[in-house]
Length: 260
Image (cartoon, rainbow, N blue to C red):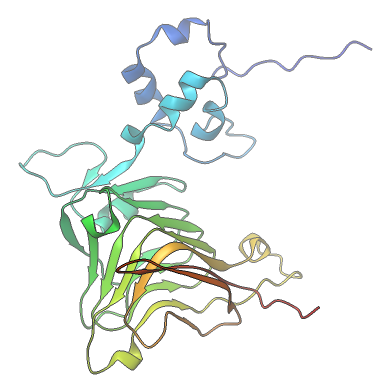
C-alpha cells in the first residue's frame, strides 16, 4: 500500500515558495498575529510550528521584535508592543509571550499576578541594569499562578517577598533577589512557595503538570531565609558558588524526594 503523503498546510511553505519572496519585515508582521505557543489541533497556525519550517522562518518567528517591551516613553507617541509598565505588558500579553524590560531604570512592581505562561527578561547586560521594586505595604512583587520564567532581573522588596509562587513551574535564571534590611527582617523572604505537590489522581491539567521552582545562578540577599514553603514542596539539590563579591545559588523547590 502506497504511503500517503501528508498535505502541507498553507503556512508550511517550502523555502522556494512565493511567500519567501516577502521581505523579513513583512513576514515578521504576519508572524506577529500567530499565537506564541502550540495551538490546538483545530487552530494549527502558531509561531512555534512556524519556526519549524526552515532556518529563516525560525529566525524571524523567534526575533526579539516580536517580543513585548516595557520602557519609559521618551515622547507622547505610542508604539505597538511597547508598554510604560510591566503590569500593562502582562495584561496585553498572550500565553507564551516574552516581555523584555528595558535596562537603565527602576520599575515599580507590587502584587502583580501572572496567570498565563510568560517569559520576563531584563534588557541589560547584567541583572543590576533592570530593577523591579516592591514598595513597603505590598505582599510581593510578582505572584505566579502559571508556568513562567524570569531572567536577568533585579527584584527588590522592602518588606514581604520578592516572588510568590502559587502554582505552575517557575524558573528563575541569573537574577538578583534582594530583601531590603529592616527591623522586621523575619517577615521577609526572597521566595515564598505555597504550592501543593502533584496529585496523580487529579483531573486538572495544571495539577498533572506539577509545580515547582528552579533557581539557576541567582544571587539571593537579605530576608529571614532564601525560601519559605507554606505548601507541601521542599527545598532540595542546593548548590552555591562563592565569587569575589557575591554568592550564586542553584536549587529546586519541588516534591519531597522519597528515601531510597
